[in-house]
Length: 103
Image 1 (tube, rainbow, N blue to C red):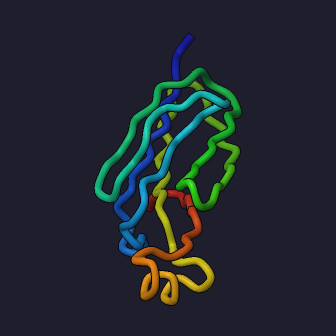
Image 2 (image 1 turned 60 degrees about the vertical axis):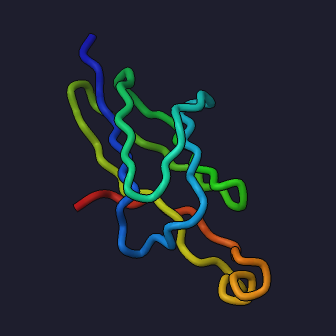
């Protein structure tokens, strides 16, 4: 059976460039991304559950991968509520995880 490929990039200018993002697919940890890194995952064709976790926030995304396809998502962290206050007082603030289709 022909596989599919999921590529995750962490290179968005909207990313706050703080905190890593742990990547799991269908409950299996695949790695973690710091800003500027990418991860390529070979999967069986079909629908998969992608979990992105920065240990502060999580995002779940369903991805459909037809056989032989490559799908690329840009992932990262955006400022969350009270981000600037947290940054000023603790050196870090709450962030939200995002995942978007690459252009």
